[in-house]
Amino acid sequence: MSSSYRIQNLAGGLLIRSHRETKSWERLLIACVAGGVAWGVTSSLLKIWWCVSFAFVIAIGVFLTARGDSAELRATNVEFASRGHAGRRGPRHLSSAGDVRRLEFQDPTGKVRGLYAVTDRRDFCLLDYEETMEVIQAIENRFRFGGAMARKLFGWRCASF
Image 1 (cartoon, rainbow, N blue to C red):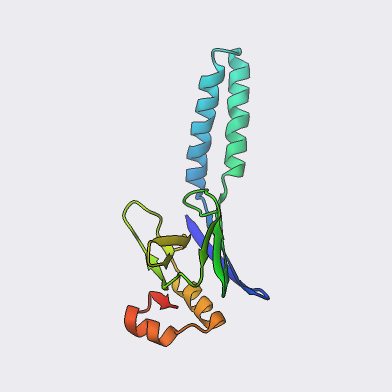
Image 2 (cartoon, rainbow, N blue to C red):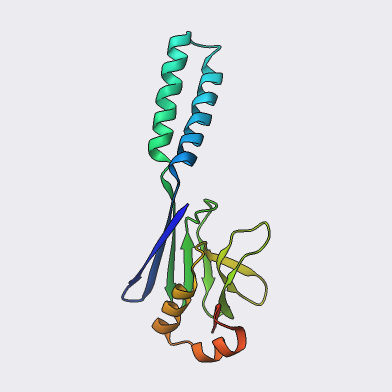
């Protein structure tokens, strides 16, 4: 999957959007599986040519709609709000900026890799995009957090608040 992101300055904060494009062969594989499932479900209910037609329409529809996933992070001096993580479609995640000790890139085993907000109790995945240093620097520059001290303490992969 190829990934891209865009950082926008808003009146009250930053809006970071990332998008992952699904490769053509992955889209084709997903469409074939969907067509096979459609055929399997309808084969006992409809005549063969209806099953083939239905499976073909389902496969084409899935191929055209399986383009990729998007994620969005709204960062303000009060909170971090993220939604639509590309790896999982879940509810919106909110983190109070006051609870966040630092932002860092993490690649945990069995979890989504990306930008995490580290708090005293747990880590929250805010944005599952792999090139997060520019995002961290944009947040750091926008809100003037202690960036130089964070780089000394934690290296280039995180920002401390």
